[in-house]
Image 1: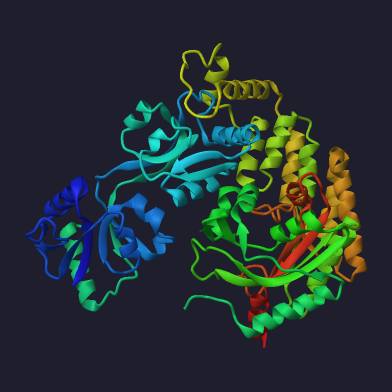
Image 2: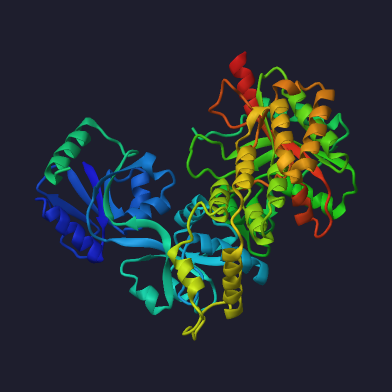
Length: 229
Length: 364
């Protein structure tokens, strides 16, 4: 059996079910609402596992799932060397969100990473510590800023309500997910014009590390036919 | 299998190398494996988190598994050592690997550090001692001198603000290039800046300022941007000279003659060029074939390094897949940074014993 992991709740689960449904595959939870296993109808040899979207990257990388649906941002953040261990089979066209860098709107002198870097240098001289950027996407943010040669900042961990940290004076800037930018604006923040770290959407991934027997491969071929991949 | 330490042969090699450094009078030293994270973070910034293992102690806060010996050895010397001094050490260092699973996360380093003394002589002694210790492995040396580029930047006929910004990014070639292009007006001012500078009162209408960055700080930055906009662009000749220095890639004698030509138009690098001449003479006196010694103007310009003068490395030409077997350089500014006002000229290098054993076995 091929193990397919999909998000276990919310809109992401519903949209995933719809996406497979539109391609002739019906995904269902087993009877009980609390059950975290399910069935796939319309193809043989695929079993369904319902997991938190945040755990799917790890399970794919470890090879405990053959296929999985999760945000492309989560895979890039959580799986080191993800493109060696996983392959993107399909961008599913929903769950879109951008990982961006935002600063206070009042910083009229700041529009680009180049400005952020200059401000970080001055901030460190003035305040004696590095400018703080709050995020839960440490790896993606750090790689992005290193790639663009931004120095003199530090990342501080923020696992929720990240838009509020500037007002609370626990950070000067944020790196966070946004879909419309409305919450950012409401919190007096603006996105840097070149501050797009990653444009994320729900993606169907294949694990390269999972066991792929001939039977598994045949099932995958049949599935890819069905999905039009 | 997880690549790991290579056991007894590598340890024996580490001790053999340390004995070579001890024979020059270096004092053996040891450092704790767990180092306070704040010193390393202050020095390297956030990038160190991608390279070093961070752990936490309930009383001492964040700690790091030592990613190298140089920083703790410099701290110990600045706290209690007298000059001149020389040290050697051998032990494990720990490096996170975020991209390449084939790279080891734990390996041995044997090092040699000289504090004080005449810089050209000390540079040559560290290089020649390491070259001698690695003799018969047929390694290819690389050399460079970040001090020449820094001297060239300091000598530019432009504002101190621009020089400071360029010096801050000497180790980040991409950002350095972007700054140079902007200062020489090769890239136009972005529309956002044009509008900001045209505004009479850019901060009008901003009543609430969230966070720690104050109105005065924003006003100061706008004043800096205005001053920058009024500073004339760097001359074509000057940026061309910087480009020439960055792109140097020749044998040491040819580089020296190019640099002497450049120094005619840019006298600011004369002292650094004299320093290079002295170093090459000292290397030659120690039996190094200086005529064949490669020199690259951009060698050692990577982040997470603190070298600000002579830099060198030794790589296996037949095993280009392996990291350099030995690396080192001069780090005068690091001693000033960690010495709280006191500074000592210092130079050092490390050898990776596992790689020595690996290359030696491959040749047997």
